Length: 241
Length: 268
Image 1 (cartoon, rainbow over the protein chains, first blue to last red):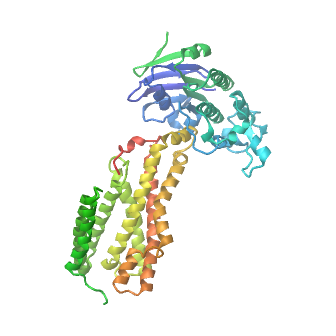
Image 2: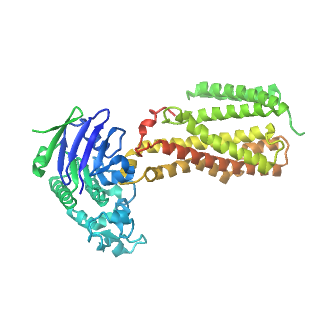
Image 3: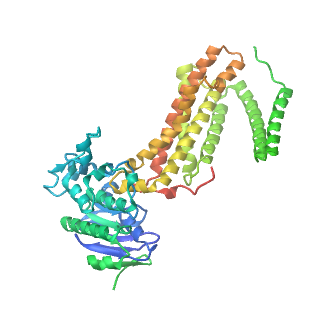
């Protein structure tokens, strides 16, 4: 849908950096740990103070409320944090049920929000908790990562590191971002789940023409997914090879 | 007057008890004997000085002098709030947030009590103003110190969670909401507990004082109630102001969590 462009991004450890990702383009960033991969992603998501401007298509970051910008350039941090009790509570409101937040709902592709399914725990046990309708997309994403939809009722404390990481990706996609900033999203995953995550990111990228900036230290992954490869060195981005 | 005057000898006897305590601390190697003695000496000097100052103030009923006294009390309380923070805000904020919130809450509640509730004439009569303000400042001070400390500690510890909420498209308000609520609760719990157990476990200090000075117990109880209500309100307002300003200060104009605005951990 829209390209992601960095214009003079500069902080103590970085830049100034110029980078343009076309809509739907996949770009890898690699570099030894401590080279600033995470700092770069955090700067784009506007989590740390820095200079410079970033653009989504024609819209500059500074013209948007920070909350809107961060929702639209979805950052998946290396460590997934969860603030509420159950997994489902972390999904954005309009992904949990249709009809709320018309602005955000309209961002989702048409025809997908119409059909909804109930999470199984609510349907079977009739718990007093209000039954949450989940868009089919979320259920489909969960399935592709190897979860049943009842995972939404699970307590976050029960999740393993790998489960957290995979579910964090679903949480991120559910906020329907226009671009993805992924910080080592497969670092703690076995080969099967690495495949699952890669293929889910790829199909989201194709379906939404989302620009994806992927921090990865795994050369095999970079060849497998065949995107442009950049290396971060002394705070500067260089093309690899 | 049924007030029995205390002679220096009486106080000397009582101070021997403190010396005994210090001796025991030394014998049992508790290591607090120095602190016991210093604290006892400090309290003697401070209270005697305050007694002298109040004697002068009460004799004059001069607004500028009373204002000066109130200002001194406020600045010491502000300093004390800052001292009790593990992670202080850098710069003037470290002092300012506590002092401003105490000023807003303790001063306004004291004025309200003097003018509307008790109806003192003139409203700045020091026998009423100074003790009331002192009690309010002392209690709001503890509440604000606890609330601010809890706010900054928790914000520091749950940085990941706060940033996760920001990344999910939350505003700074959503992101800090829970931390802020916990901090406020922490600040309010001591005074709530004090109200709930008042009179059952111990007689509150002010009531004890009035009774010792010869007031009828019912009058003392009524004053104590008034004070407790005022203190609860003052602590609540003060903690809310401090936690609100403090949590706002943790974020910048682009709603980034700015933990760099807090200093390094102090021993507290």
